[in-house]
Length: 72
Image 1 (cartoon, rainbow, N blue to C red):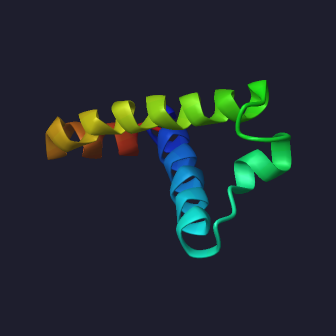
Image 2 (cartoon, one colour):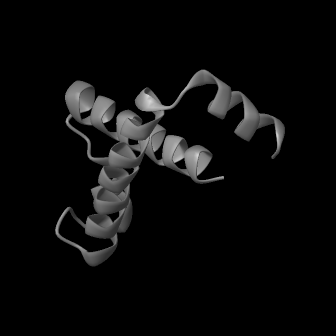
């Protein structure tokens, strides 16, 4: 469950960075009242925590990932 949640948040963050790069539009800031708003900052922090969590995916053995996927 945590892996999927982290990946979803990273996808949101990646799309947001793509929008910033292409259109200079920060969708999170636009939706939640600016980059300095509490909600926007919380979302940025959650995306960063998700990125740190996903680092662990690089170091997990394939057997652990397969076992965790089958038992969900």
